[in-house]
Amino acid sequence: MVKKDWLWGRSTNVDLHDCNNKLLRDPKIIKRFIKELAEVLKMKRHGPTRIDQFGSGKLKGWSAMQFIETSSIVIHCDDKGNRAFIDVFSCKKYNSKILVKFCKKFFGAKNVSVYSKERI
Image 1 (tube, one colour):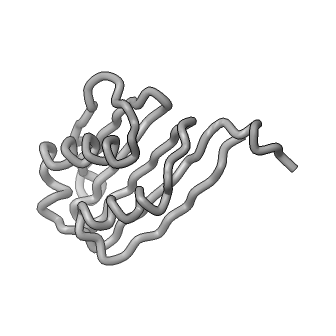
Image 2 (cartoon, one colour; image 1 turned 180 degrees about the vertical axis):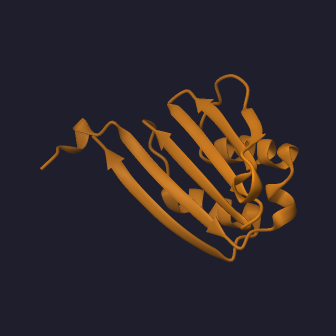
Image 3 (tube, helix red, strand yellow; image 1 turned 30 degrees about the vertical axis):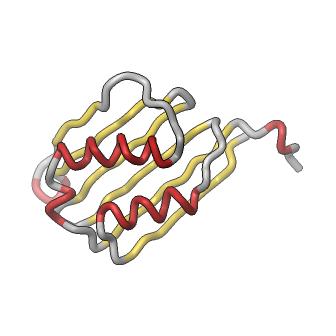
């Protein structure tokens, strides 16, 4: 059994399905999402948001990454499948339920799956 004071951080993966497609295709919206998510989680962003579109065919989409003082926020958008995949890792405590609720509402997702794990 691991003692709670040995925890390094929390990792949460949020898979959004049936999202608003227009939002997944707009790099300005995706950057705004990262900024607002950091604010909602009370995380301090470190440096600029890195965003790029790459891949081809059904694998083409926008991805963005934001360092936060306590680790990172990453999003991968699948605009062909109307999905978004968000990963947050932080050594600072945060509420995974608030994270999921914000992501689902922001992208208008109809379905969501979540995996959250304490990291040691």
